[in-house]
Image (cartoon, rainbow, N blue to C red; front, side):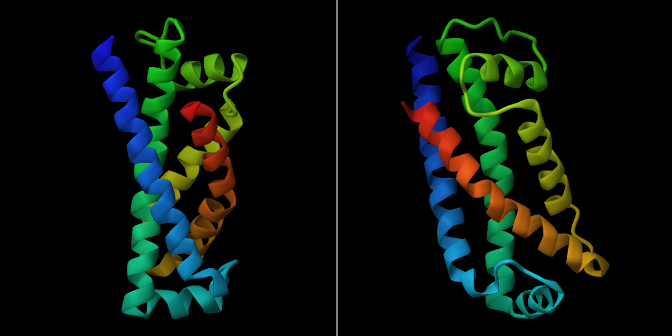
Length: 150
């Protein structure tokens, strides 16, 4: 049980770090939000702001992954049977016990993750759309993190 609690605390710490960096990076590009075609071209062609976009993408991927692990451990600590269950089943169990997530939100997180990881130069508009979606999801990640931190 001690190992599970350590793992839980580690995931909480990791999520906190990713959220903090995401918020900070969105503050750095706040004048560009929401990002449109002109703004994405400007951001993408500037090394400094491209680095911020890369960091947003990376941190989003990391937090989405870590939130899944955190929910799994949280449910285990609450006595839920999660062994050998698919993540979508775990999300449904979590929703039933009050975790502020549902299947639709989880699938949206996955779609955005897939969009953000498939970067092609001819799809700058898709990059802009995915960054805008991450920005919209940030309050939900914060709410979810705060719930799981209690």
